[in-house]
Length: 334
Image (spheres, rainbow, N blue to C red):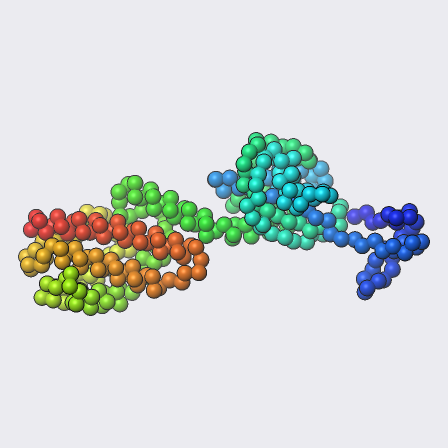
């Protein structure tokens, strides 16, 4: 890094003196102190819908021919946000808008000395990706498979950005899987869902849930006839349902097995003289107690936790709608 030799004010020589406990450049003539402050630098993280990050290949030193975020110095009269958007336009041909601040850090540079690097997440609003000022190439790379970046600070920012987006991306992926399974009209889904953790918790606490359910149907006015049904048989049926709940929802058991089980349940309840509306109510109450347990099980501090509960609720509704349908079918066929 080049250091100042002459005074900006009178043109005389600068010397190093100790002032305020630090070495400072001081003019030998006018005694003006020349403070050396970090230079403000703006950088941009921009990711497309495929979670690929936009990088530019540097046309000059430092780190010539290496990849980095669009980056450059803030100029007089512009905000650090405007500097970030200007660099994005100049180096990559893209117009953007600031989404959020990602990182602020200090970095020592052999060319420019101390830098204060401010990195923003930016959303594309226009333009066409093309290499421009200070760049010889411009392209998107998968964020999990980037080339070595020109600056260590940007390597750290990538990891911070991934962590910042982790919950959002997980929710998006889980929702896509949920929608895909719904379109396929199945109770299981073609991939891992965020709510699988709660499904596991339901199975692991099946005894507690069933005890609450049995207590409910014994006193609930919508299931009066269930008082005459053998409690051991009720417990066994409910334990089987919850015990196989995970296997059904995760696709390890075929829906034909679900259909057979609930057809048989409906047929048996008809033989026992239980009204069909009470059978459906008992199934609905079991769904309620599964939901209430998972609600009490969770900690609702983050958006991803709330989404997980929402997703399980959707799965429960679809699962128990199917269960009720097959039960009514078996009841009428019995």
